[in-house]
Length: 440
Image: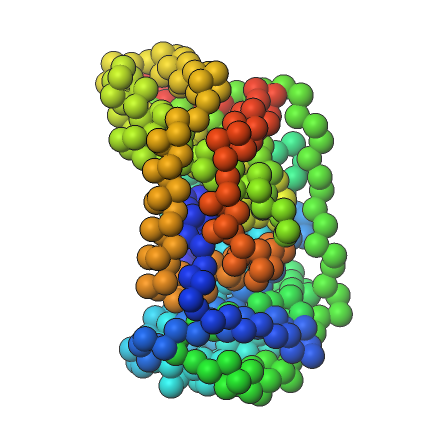
């Protein structure tokens, strides 16, 4: 159920909103923001409810409670039994799920358009009437502890990613894993869950995105009927996180585990996020990631390390600026058999240095822009992707206009913009370089 969103939003980052899809936006009196995306090609609808609460919004010492609450939202209400919500969706031929990130928690259903009133009724019900019995809380706490044991503690790569994030941030809660630290998860209880629910699960902290075969006027009526009576939170804190101090020194970590199947190098740099009305640098970084490692055959790292020198069997670069606060720009290199991590890192550094010296290949930039234009067309084929794109953007403080402007901002990026972004972000003092290797 949990989704940590490392590369999962890469397509959404590049795939701007389909401009042919009519967008309607309004806000209910209780603060619920509603976005309607019309697509009448098929009689289906996606309802997504986004809470502007993620890992970085949790109370100090309660890491994992946002993800914990994602689980608790399926435990039923006064009128809906545990598991019944999903059973109703499945019985009507639909699907539902949820995910938690650093900055938001989202719940969605994809179902026949005629069933939208039922979905709104059920989703609004659990926003206000969740059954947080002692038994439900205790049972689900064991579930998330077991999830951490299976997905993180037993997986060296997951533990390594946690350590990398913890080293990247000196003061910001992005350093803490979405699933939570085990010792803090063990301290979660019913009282903490009730306080979190009362504060964060309210219409004035949520965004409703409805995409598909719907009429905006009908959606507004349904939203007013089902969500309109819900009371806003009166204890919702200002969304202010601790700021990062200046990063003055490169950091390194080495982690060894007998379970590691393939050693590799990971490097991250502190990088700016997308900001409302000012997305130019984020767009340049998005294209930089594609240039450096977006393709396994044509990117800078692939050509230099996988083909020219056969130093690596896999290379990648990634960046997702859809965040509230500064995020990271990352590189990964998996060395070829017989190539040491020392030599693989040296080859990676040499390739980056050459790129910074030579600049952007015009043909590569043109190719990536063509791919982006193609992604704009493909984005129209799935209203679920559009709903996710708008919801994620709005949940981190961007606007509908920012989402609609994103394709033009990407299209306007020049080679000079990319190089300026690269020189601003690819700096040693903001970097963390990690080696994951097999225990010797």
